[in-house]
Length: 249
Length: 175
Image (cartoon, rainbow over all chains, first blue to last red; front, side, top):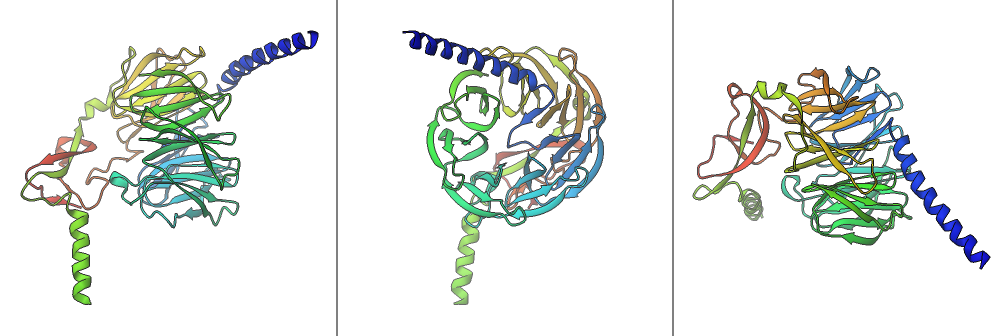
């Protein structure tokens, strides 16, 4: 009986702790914001990086009210997205992924270009995690191409990315991850949830249909989703099992 | 052999361009959408609005920002778990991008980079505008190849979008 009571008390404390950490996480989040994988603006340190169709631009925001253009780099063609991970920037275009080092934040250096051998022309937002970069290759409409894929590049050697995985999807858009769970937005399959414990052997856990998903931001315990008519929030305390919180339209 | 190659290439061309070249019926044509310079200057804070053309998202502290395609940014207060609320709408003409740091919101108004001080989210103040720093929308042609489009006329203003429209006649510009 006492054991049972102790267990019960422990569970109560744990729940209270969880709630607290949720609020603390929000409070601690104040200094830094986070964008999605479809972004064209991203902030790393005291710099704002933007990508238009061909240029990667570096603005110093040491004085945040007055950005100063420091550099404009020819990055490639038809650039669509920018994603920061550690001291790297990943630029998605309609044909390839360009990887830049921002070791020297004012002077991004191109390290490599990741090319998918299976899909030639597509739109590909990209996210990176440790030694792997995930991208969705969407081939409808202006993006051209024949079939849409989720792919994973091995970036252990950042100067020579190699595609290791290709998973068929319907019409994918942005993507993001929390721990060992990858979320992929899809027009028809909704929010697709993949187990990426082994990133080069992803397995689908579940899909949440009902909305046309465009992008996600895993933000502490909340998954913020851009859907066609607004924002949907999920509690991802357990990343593999998103719990619906609210929809804002 | 050569003939069959030519036939094959010809077929490919027909297949690829069939959508655009239909001289007898309805054609898909890109048409420039113009902004007037005066539209670009007006940034204002408005009451919450319904989302019509949902755009990019950004998380900052307990706030969530969502772009309303080409018209501004919804500000959502997510400080109460389970009860997120739209608190205001930042009207910014032709805004599509966003990022936030240290109470400053970085966005675009067509091709301009714009910085807003949102320290007091109820009274955002434009601190900087760098004209033409974000030339996303090409002023001369749509971002696609193998398409017909209505030639842009700089006299009519800045091109802020290229819209696909059905037209019975073909315009003279092609890419």
